[in-house]
Image (cartoon, rainbow, N blue to C red; front, top):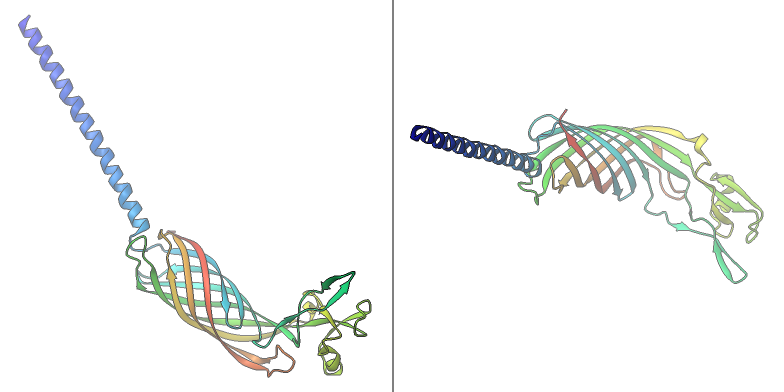
Length: 275
């Protein structure tokens, strides 16, 4: 009987030790998983950014207009990303200003759609190019900022579209109007503010667009403040230059030119991933 009790006690002690060991092993396994998750999270949040693909959309304000763009990047090394970019832009002359025609009806002042006085052509650009983004300084932690130098160039397709105005045949008679584009024979009427009722509409002149091929290049700096490395939240500042094979005239009384240079500030948002 004593032997049986002794064996029973030993068995129970063995089972207790095994259970305790098993609990310790599971606890250690859970702790290791937790540490791996923390390590992975920190790598995504704070570690070196080594994702090999990225895509973003953005917009820029230029000193001579605006730009919308999309960008696709491929990592070449730890510090260099090659990227392709497609842009669509409009150039605006620094002299252009919006005006509108207004009349008083029953005590209320009613104005027409705003137009640009003295404008001869709209000038849009579709651009495609290849560039590089070179790391200057990593963000270090989740509250840091990644700084890159960028340089980029490519081809431009300039699109020259005539600018139409809606003119009244007689000053003050807004019931008798015609839609015209600038030519020397109507110069006086085209520049007479008393006859201008408003713009002719965006669709006017689409069938008359002329293509003007060219080249473009830019340099700048990009500052990415995104908390996570797989997210793009960046501000870019820089200088852009463009050359077109034919001279461009936007305003009636301003000289035409082939070379344009501007400064810009842009915002872009996107994602990074590994293929």
